[in-house]
Image 1 (cartoon, rainbow, N blue to C red):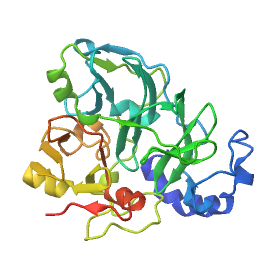
Image 2 (tube, rainbow, N blue to C red):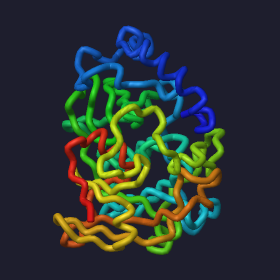
Image 3 (cartoon, helix red, strand yellow):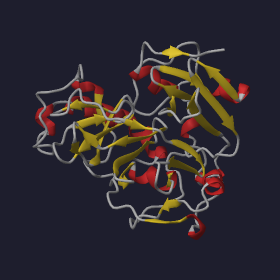
Length: 323
């Protein structure tokens, strides 16, 4: 994506150009293998260019790992996506890398996974890469819908909506990915709990890892490249919410109560995790804290910590779990 300082200056030009080009006939030269006759999108105008072309943001498909004890570059407060699968060492995927790559294709304990992060929605989720028994490898299309990353699979070049894990264009339209339990926490929390764990090593791309190209984005009044409705109840569009299924709890409430048990969900909050979308250096971002989401039996639940506008866009009839 463009640096956030350049995004707003180019916003009007980008939207005008994209609306004119929101037509499969225009996209077919870049996507010759995508079946545009199949889609769940009501209007092609919903899909905008985020700036980069297909694979302009390079997904990682051969991640390397190092032991927690050998990693010295990551700040203690920096966020990582944690994945714990029984029988194998827990793995941490630093947001300092996912900010620039957005998708990591990996295999953990025999399970093929896609670790995903959309900076514009703050949406970080892990999916099983098997679709109806067939393995899929994911890349970044460069397209956005409701400001959320549109992924694609390399095998069929179908387009997938990251926030909902669903195919929206092509062969896999209507198919869904299985979301796995994973969560975002600080690097300090991960290494304290998993001294023998593994952390994704720095990719070999020329990127400013550790820097945030979206300076002050989560303090903005409006999301980038989003023209939908604002959330109800006066909730700021870029407030973080915890989504479980079609329910959302605001960070304001979670930080105030620190522990919420309702609707079969247990949500806890603790300070110490930096925002990846605040200051120029991720390690210096404001404290947004770490949320854990479990069921009544203490088992980790699939969930997402996303911006309120994105929840409202994809779940317009969703339940807002207010005070």
